[in-house]
Image (cartoon, rainbow, N blue to C red; front, side):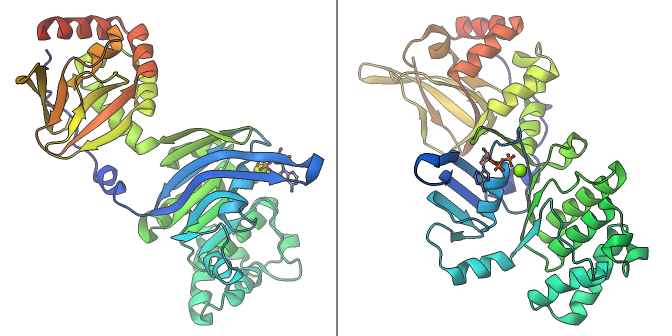
Length: 382
Ligand SMILES: Nc1ncnc2c1ncn2[C@@H]1O[C@H](COP(=O)(O)OP(=O)(O)O)[C@@H](O)[C@H]1O
Ligand SMILES: [Mg+2]
C-alpha cells in the first residue's frame, strides 16, 4: 500500500470557495427548436450547464452547433421552449415580460454585428445605452470615458464609426455592452475582428471585471489565443454540450495527481485528460462512501480527509485499514469486475476525486506503472 504524500499542493482558495458560490446560470434539460410543422428542426438537445458567479466561460464548437442559440436563450433574446433555464436567480421558462426586462438590465451583450449608429460618435453610441438604462449621467460619463480609454480609444472618443477601423468599432460595441456594470456578460466572438494586442486588452478587461466586480462572462470564441483566461471551457457539437471542463479544478487535480507515484508514469497530456474526467465527491464524517457487495463503478482518490476500510464477515465487522490523503480505494472491483469487497466509511469530512470505470480502464491501458502498482497494492491488502 502506498504512503501518504507530504508534498501535495494546498487546495487553492478559489477551488473550495467556488463550490459554495451561487450559480449565475443554471441550465437543465434545455431543448430548442426552430421552425414549425414539417420544417421544425431541433437545434439544442437536453443541455445542462452551471456557471458560477465570477467565472469566465468559453464556448467553442463548429459553426451551426448551437452556441449562439444557447447564448441568446441565456440572454433572454429568445424565448425558452423546453427545459429549465435559471439566470441570476430567475427561472426564464414562462417568465413574464416585466421579469425579462428586469433581468436584461443586469446583462451586457456583445454580439458580432456591432450596429453602431453612424451619426453618433463613439462616446454618444455608448452613452445611448447608458441613457436607455437610465444610468445617472455623471456616473455614466466617467464610466464611458474610462472604458473607451481602457479599450485603447482614448484619442477617438469623439470619432464617428466611419472614421474608425473594424476593430475600433468592435471595441466601441464592447464599451456599450459594459457601461451599466452588468452582472453577466454574454459575448459572441468579441475578439474576432481584433488584432492580437486589442483582443488581449479586451479579455484582460473581462478578467478584471470578473475578479473585481464578480462579473460572470460567457463568451463564444474560436480564438485559441485567449483560451488561457477561461475558468471553464464548454464544447458544443450538433446541439449537444459534449464537454464541460472546469479548467481551474482540472489543473488543481492535475497538480495533485503529479505528486502521486501511481500516476508518475503518465505524461502531462494523459494526466490532464484524467483530471478532466475526474469528479469531485464530498463525504461527511460517518458517511458510507462504498458499501460492500455493491457493484463497483467508481475509483476514488482521497483529496483530503481519511476513511476506514471495513470488511463485513457475516455478523462481524472488522476495520482492516485506514486510508488518507493521496491514497485510493475502489480499484479491486473495477479490475476484477466483482462486487465491492469492503465498505468505505469517512472518518472525517473528506473530499475525493472519482473516476468512472471506463476512464479508469483507459488509464490502466496507458500506464504500465499504474497497473503494476495497483496490483501490488491489491496484493498487499489481501
Ligand atoms: N433563426 C433561425 N431559424 C432557423 N434555424 C436557425 C436559426 N438560428 C439558428 N438556426 C439553426 O440552429 C442551429 C444552431 O445555430 P447557431 O446557434 O447559430 O450555431 P453556432 O452559433 O454554433 O454557429 C443551426 O443548424 C442553424 O442553422
Ligand atoms: Mg454563432
